[in-house]
Amino acid sequence: MNEIATETAPEALNGSASSPDLVVGAIERGILYGRFVPGQRLIEADLTRDLKVSRGPVREALKRLAAEGVVALTPRRGAYIRALSRAEVLDLLQVLQAIMRLAVGMAAARIRRDRTSKTHGYAEKLASAYELLKTQGANGDRVLQSIARTRFYDAILDIAGNRELVRINPVVPTQILRMQVHSFLPPQTHQRQFDDYQRLYNALIAGDPRQAKWIVSLHIRRSRIQMLHLSDEAFAPTQEN
Image 1: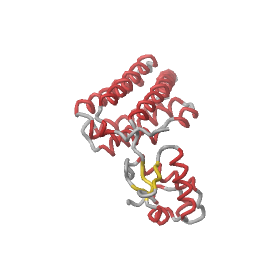
Image 2: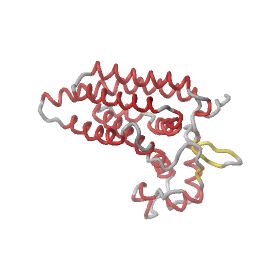
Image 3: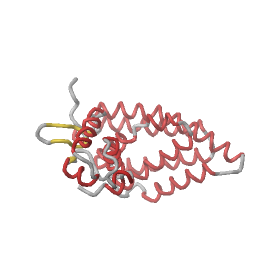
């Protein structure tokens, strides 16, 4: 396993804290930064060593992440990053569509007001995040692409200015989904996604909430259709209730 201590809170590194929260945060960051991918095992001994905590907080963190559907705990395999079933993916995209429609509408309106006041701070923040995404391109490394996408959407949520939207945004499952299906999508799908990002960026920079909401809705709706037709190999088996 790659070292993850460098991404943890400073107090974890000097041994002054050993809360399960720190372990949960480190694992989630590991997912967001591509260190942990669907199906990858999480070894307790590695986590305790890298995070400088005892096994108690690690086990508690793994149980919490299992309850959230991020980690699976099995007698033989131990803990590993869960892949999503097709049904879970469709549910996730439905939620994302609602969240992002609201977020892009609010962000576009704030960018328009920002331009009227001639401060341009929001537009510059969005431009910086989009430039990173544009640099990766449709054919870039899947991990770097996913990180850039996360930062682009984070910038939109930040500009929207609603803390509850940030709190409920399912960023970790979304990253798992991206990593999980990337290799199953044809090149033209990746290109179309990046074309959508450019159109969304243009609508946001123009301060057009209606256009921004239409573009993000179309983008996610197309993703849901794609997930309906993707091979079963791309998904985890559906969990029986």
